[in-house]
Structure formats: structure tokens, C-alpha cells
Length: 448
Image (cartoon, rainbow, N blue to C red; front, side):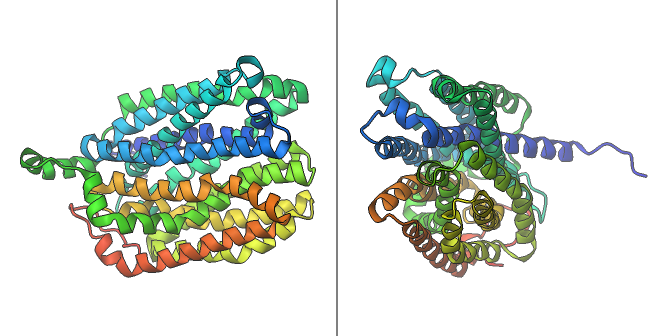
């Protein structure tokens, strides 16, 4: 039996993959606690208004502001990450997120400091948005650029696992906080406890700073471009805007339905089920937690399959599933039964996982190493803004305007059609868009 210790390269690869997955998990945890709090308490505490709907709309609008800030984080980190390295930007993003999240937990309410409370809340949410916009590209590239041959999809999925891990952890902490407090105590201080976990992010940032090395792909691209830097100022963003903007928008269009539907079932349905259907808060949170656990299995399975048969084939299957399931999902939710709510969101979660699995590797393969951080981050954050950021807000507006959840189903169907059109165009352009500029391990192109 072989008892030799793993090689330094293998050990470092595992350490990087673990660090990237943890970075993604804690970053998304911090981001999701705001969405849950927005659905449960932030409207009343920071945006007092004449109706509960108005307060929730204001809270979800603040939630959306964080998404609007994400492209800013993606642009800044992309520029610096493509020129100075993936690791420094990941460390900076984690630090910003930790400080902003803990700050929200410490922020006095409108009743205590007046208009300053919602203003500071919005500013802290903007910092969260910048941080997560910067983080995703760094964590994704740390994982995929260290991936061994034929496993880029699987390694990229480790970062995507941060999403369900963040959801499960955030829901669990809120469930515990709600179970040990009554409604008055939860509204007073119990909701703040999940935000204090933000302090732990700072320790992870320090670990990555001191123990994780820069990616081989960036070091190789950096050497290849060193001579160019002496005679020409290089701007990854300028290169993207001049020559690859179409690919960025196609990437965003392909993913918007995923991120929109995800935030609808994580935050929008939580508000809808508790406020409109009068379901118990803790029970709905428990269902959301259980549904998210399925993604821990489905995401790596879909990613591994994409390493064998191609990214876009898997990706398109998930988009078709979301299109076909949008109406049945809300028909089940509207029964106000926990069982059928669980079935509706479980099936949706499976289709989301099918898209999440190959997504990191797909976006990495659309751009060459010297512009990959910028291009992949922009594509992802465009989807986040026009999909996820607006989704809970749009859900409340559509329900208020039409009185039927079928309007929300129509919203999902429209985004799914856009996704399928974008995927079709990406497939036809894959050979050119995915051609590497630096010698890297042979990976399947998105269209394969």
C-alpha cells in the first residue's frame, strides 16, 4: 500500500481549494444574512412606513443596492486581480465583507438615531456589494487555475458550494436565534447575532494572506506580459470593453435566470410565505435550510459531469428546467402547505444546482488568463444586478400589482428564455472565446 505523503504541489492545491471554498462560504453567509433579515425585520426597524409592504419594499431595495455595487467591486478587483494577482484581491474582499457585516449587526435602528440609520445601512450594504463583487472572481480563479487536468469544473464547483453552505449556515443561525428568543427579543437584538459572525471572516483573510500562494496561471501570464508592460500600459478592462463586451453580456444573460430564481426562493418566498400566506417563520426557514442541503450534492455532481460532456450542455439543461418548472413551483407554494412548498423549492433547487455546477469553469474558459478576473467577474455581476438584486423587489411589486404569483412565474420564464438564447450564442462562439492565450492544461471548451 502506498503510504507516501502527498506531493507539495498536491498539498498546496488542496490547501488552495479548501481556502477558496471557505472564502466563498463565509462571504456568501455574510451576504445572505442581510437578505433573510430584510425579509424578517429590517423593514420595520430601519424603514418605518404606513404599511408592512412599503417597509419590506424599502428593505429589499436596500438589498438590491448591494447588487448594484457588485459590478464596481468586480471592475476594481478585476483590474487589479489581472495585473497584481488573484490572492490580494480575495484577501481585500474578505476584509471588507467582515467589517461591513459586523457593522450592520452593531447599527442602531431608526428609532434610536433617526434618518442616519437607513443611510448608514445602505452604505454598509454597498460595501458588502463591492466585497462580494470582488470576492467571487478571486475565489473562482484560485480554484479553477489550480485545478488538475480534466477537473476544472469540479474544482470550480467548490467555490459554488459556498452559496448553499452560506444559505444553510445563515438559515441555521437565524433559526437558533429565533428559537431562543421571543418575537420582541428577536426584533430587539436576536436578529443581530448572525451578523457578528462577520468578525470571523477577518481571521480567514489573514490565513489566505499568509498561507496560500498565487495561482500558476497568473504567474505565467504575468511573465508573458512583463515585456508588454514596459512599452504599453495594460488595462484588462479596456481590453474587455473593446473586444469582449459581447461575451460579458452573454455570460450575464445566461446566468440571470439562475441568480434571480435563487433569490426568489431564498428571500422572496420567505417574505411571501410568512406575510401573505401566513406561514410560520421558523418552519419556512427550516424548509429553506433542508432544500439548500440538496445543492451540496447536486452542484459538484453537475460540475463533474460537465468535465466529461461539456459545460453548456449541462448549463442549458438547468435553464430549460427552470423555464418549465416556474409555474408548477408557485402553484405548489400557493397551497400554503409546508410539504408542497418544500417540493416546489426542492425541484427548483435541483435545476439551480445543474446551472451552478459548471458555471465557474464556464466563465473562466470564456476569457484568457490576462483578462479572466475582469471578464468573468463582470459577467457574473451583471447577472447578479439584473437577476438576483432585483428579483425579491420585483416579486413584491408584481404581487402587489397583479395579486397573483403567476406574474412571478412569468418573470422567471422571461429570464429563462434570455438564458437559452445567450447559451445558444455562446455555444456558437465557444471555439474562439475559449481559446487560451497561455499554455494551460487541456480543458473541454464550453461547447464540447
